Length: 413
Image (cartoon, rainbow, N blue to C red):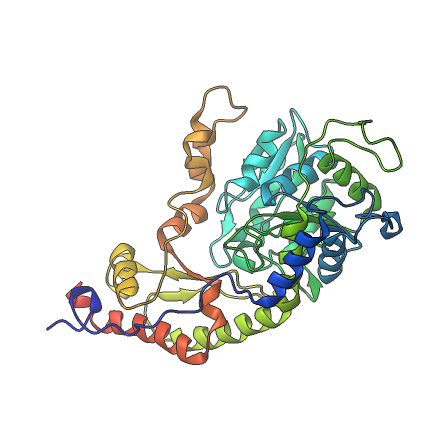
């Protein structure tokens, strides 16, 4: 009888891993406070930039409280909450002056929002390849992606691993281009001891269902620039201006406000973020050590500047020639052994049908030759969800044990 669970053998693991989202009575308590208050969405405009702007006649705003606490946790003075991470990118880019005819440099190995947000405000995304060892934007290739039309550079701290911000900012500074951090995966993460979202001119976060903090949806812009924060808040508030009449609009903006219910849940999520981040880091380090010596299993390394990796995804590269089977068979076998996993993105962003539409400013077919590491990543990546890292060392033993079992019985596949 086969030893592999895929062919009827006993799986390494039958019990489930930690489920996500993690929640308890604290979320319920804060949400009920909102419910009973009767103020389900309202907060006073201006509190993102000036806490004294609060309307003392109204119940305390959960959104305002969350903006202040999350921004502080990420090393910033200002936080502007909004409906989702895509909106956060849109708003931040608009506030930075990005518009029609401009270019925004982004990596091609990331979620579509990093590239679609510029397009939604009339700009053109230009793809810069990643470093295959970190899955983050490669500073060595950045110079070649910059043109006279480049308005902003958007590195992604992918899977919670900080991008090489020192090198990226050095290149950006030579050209006088601001850097906007896409920190959708990096709640609680640090680069060289500095929190994600506080290094560039601004950072953007997502609270979508899969993220390390979640209210189902939601987004945040963090910055230490008061003027930029004010513009972002105005854009989220349909172009309103602090101190001016409610139905007076000063710029074209969106109705992108976060609700009080979402902020209540996120306040509870924020309270346990630090301890969860520490636990993920401890388990990731342990799992990395347990995987050592398995041919073809290459965990994405943590460079020295990654002093606080957020571990949104435990990423590894699967080298088929070294392991001895193809990745698809490995993933099926690993799932059968009781370890949930995926291959991540099937292709880089520029291969999406969106970028084949007529009338676009660039011929995106050329990026396949310009981004070999992104192409390679889509054939090698294996993703393990961050919730798996919220368990115990015995859970990590099962993950590593399943991979080793598959390797030792690979001839069955």
